[in-house]
Amino acid sequence: MGFEKIINAGLKTTVQRIAILDFLENSDVHPSAEMVFNYITEKYPTVTLSTVYNTLEKFVENKIINKVFTIQGKARYDAKNEKHHHLFDKNTGEFIDVFDDGLNDVVEKYLKEHKISNFKIDDFQINFTGKI
Amino acid sequence: MGFEKIINAGLKTTVQRIAILDFLENSDVHPSAEMVFNYITEKYPTVTLSTVYNTLEKFVENKIINKVFTIQGKARYDAKNEKHHHLFDKNTGEFIDVFDDGLNDVVEKYLKEHKISNFKIDDFQINFTGKI
DNA sequence: TTGATTGCAAAGACTTTGCATATAC
DNA sequence: GTATATGCAAAGTCTTTGCAATCAA
Image 1: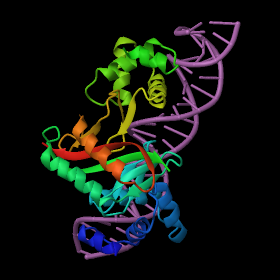
Image 2: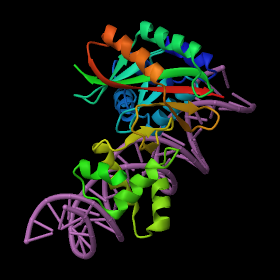
Image 3: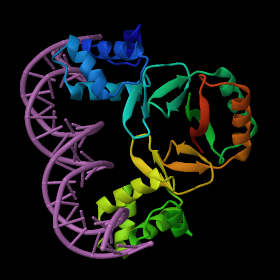
C-alpha cells in the first residue's frame, strides 16, 4: 500500500499524501501537478495546488515517485517503481512506460565492460522517440 | 560553419542567429537561454532575451540544436550534432556529453531484434546518473 | 507537546506573445 | 518589395516561498 512507502520514508501520513500517492500509483499516464490537483480536489476540495507541489516534491526527494519532463519541458510524475524507460509517442506527444529487462541487461553488461567518461554510473534511463 | 546550417534550414541569416549558433557550437557546457543572452549581449548589447528565446526555439524546430532539461527541469541547449547521450554528474548537478559508438551499436542491435511496445523507434537517448 | 504539514496569498523563474520597426533576400 | 526577424513591453505558465493555522505522532 502507498502509505507504507510514506512511513518508510520517514514522512508523516496525511490524507493529502495518501490520496496523491494513490492516484499516481493507479494512473497509467504520467500526470502533471495540475492533473493531480484536479483529481484530488474532486474528493478533497480544500487541498491546494501548493500542497500538491510540495507533496510531489517531497515524494521525489524521497524517491517514492519519479519526476520526468515532456519534450516541452513540463514536469510529469510517475509512481512506477520497477526500473523502466520512456517512449515519447511522436503522434500524441505523450509518454509510454517501457519495461524491458532484456534491454536493461544488455546495457548493464556493456557498462560493466566499458567505463563511461570515467564515472561510476548509478543508473540510466532511456528515452525513445517513435511512432506506431 | 554555423551559417550554412541556418541557410540549409531555410532560415534567414542574421547577426543574432550566427552569433548564437556560434556560441553554442563552441561551448562545452549546455547553456541556458540566459547564459546565451549574457554572452551575446557582451558583443551585441541590443540583442534581447526574447530574440534569444525565439532564435533558440527556431533552431530546435529546425533540428539545428537540441534542447535538453536538467533534473530540475530547466532548459539547456546543445549544438552537438553527433549522436550522444547525457551524464548527470551527481556531485555538480551538471551535464556531460557521452559519445560512445559501442554503446549505440549494442542498443541498436537490441532494437533490431526486439520490438519496443510495438513502436517504430526513430531515436533514443540515454541519461546516465553517476559520479566520479 | 512538538515538529511536520497544510492552506493561503504572494512572489519568483522561465518563457511566450503582439505589434511596430528593421532587415535579409 | 515582401516576407521574415528583431526589440520591446507586457502577459502567461509553472513553481516556490513565507507564515500562521492545523495536524500526526
